[in-house]
Amino acid sequence: MKNDNLKNQYRINEQIRVREVRIVGDNGSTVVPTRDALNMAREQGVDLVEISPNANPPVCRLIDYSKFLYQQKKRQKEMKAKQVKVEVKEIRFGPQTDEHDYQFKLKHAKEFLEEGNKVRAYVFFRGRSILFKEQGEVLLLRFANDLEEVGKVESMPSLEGKKMFLYLAPKKAGTKKQSQQARDRVAAEAEAREAKKAQQAPQAEPDTEMPANGGLLANAKISADALKKLTETETED
Image (cartoon, rainbow, N blue to C red; front, side):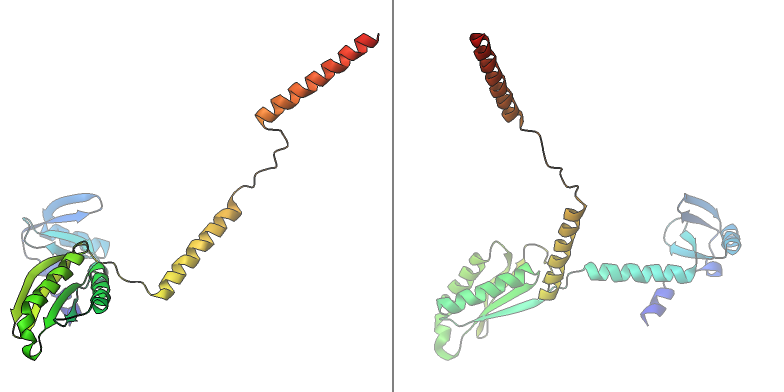
């Protein structure tokens, strides 16, 4: 069904009934009568495909129609893959949530927002606990404040029936969470690249010469010893 919609989206060859068209390609564009454009397509063994019908004149390409549809489908898949799917994750509190439970839920909410998901936090008031609605509002405001680095408030706390809701949206685009298997594979590839670099790096030849300072000191010592011996020999003579 989707393929049929894609095919019906473009006019080709004799379906193009305007007086002239603009042909675009790797070498630029040119405006020619539609009849000439059709002849060019036949000579090249391709199709005349109208890609921008609302332009003046309409823009066309000389390309095999099957190949053109394949390129369009591939482009659509790539665009869809780049889109981050935003989900709404729920965090539920009671009006008297203890600190340990609060920190546990805060951690999960932070992870949801960092992954690019929205968070809907709410306090559920059961029975007479509705009397503590102010306490629930304070809890949600604290929750929003603790997440201000990764999330922004879309809607302030509001009471709907027995639930008080707070909506948060991520401040940054989410990053897809990798599985442990994917992380291990990335680490192994990085280790293999480092090992390959180490093998290809030229090994330094052992330095047989003394360092500059050491050489100067050694030469000075040898010269002093030679001078001492020479002096001793002259004295004996």
